[in-house]
Length: 266
Image 1 (cartoon, helix red, strand yellow):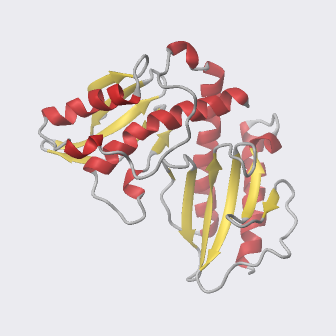
Image 2 (image 1 turned 30 degrees about the vertical axis):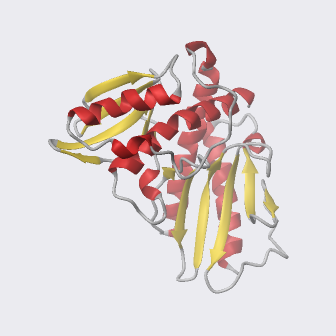
Image 3 (image 1 turned 90 degrees about the horizontal axis):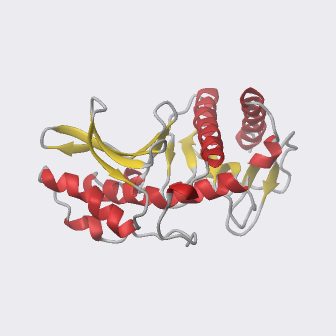
C-alpha cells in the first residue's frame, strides 16, 4: 500500500496543472466542478475538461503510461506533448500553457495560484526512477474500481451524477440527490489523518434536518465514522485484502447496498 500511496501523491501533484488549465479556460461553476478531472482506464489518462478553441474543442490529459501532458483534439490526436520528468511545477505550467498561447487563447490567468492548496509531499520534481510500476498498476486498478463502483451505485439508485476526480482532495467521487431532501456522496479518497489509509466512503446529507448517526446499521465490511467534521461509512483498501478485482467489486456492492439502505431509511 506504501507504493500506491506514493503514486497517489505524485499524480495528485501533477493534476494541479490540469486543474489550472480547467480554471483558466473552462467556464466557471459555483461548485468548482469545472476544475475537476476524469480517469480514463482504457487510455491510461487523466483528463481535464473540453475547452473551446478557434478550430474546435481541445482537452489536456496526463498520460500515465508515458508521464507526459498531452493536448488533444476531438479525434484524440495529440497536438502537443510536454514530458513530466526533471521539471518543477512552474516549468511544467509554462510548457503546458505554451500550446494554447499559439492558438491565441488568453493564458494571462494561468499563472494565478489556485484558490486551494495541497499538502507538501516532499518532492519538487519527479524523476523517472521515482515512479513505481507496481504502485502505478495498483493505482490503475483501484481508480478503475472506483469508476465502476460509482457507476454501479448510480444504477442501483437510478440517480445521475458525473464521476470525477476533485483536484483538491483528489477523490474519485459522485454526489447525487436520491430524494428531494437526501443527497449521497460516494467515492475513493486518498489516505488521510481521519482514516489513516486510502478508503471508499459513503456519506449522506439531508437538506431538511441533520442525519442522526446514533444507531447506524451493521456493515458486513467497513465501519462508521462520526465526528465534528465528517460522518459516514468507510471501507479501507486494506479491508479488501488480496481479493480479486471481481471479489473487490462484490464487496463494494455490498458496502454500497448496506450503507445506502440505512441512509434511505432515515
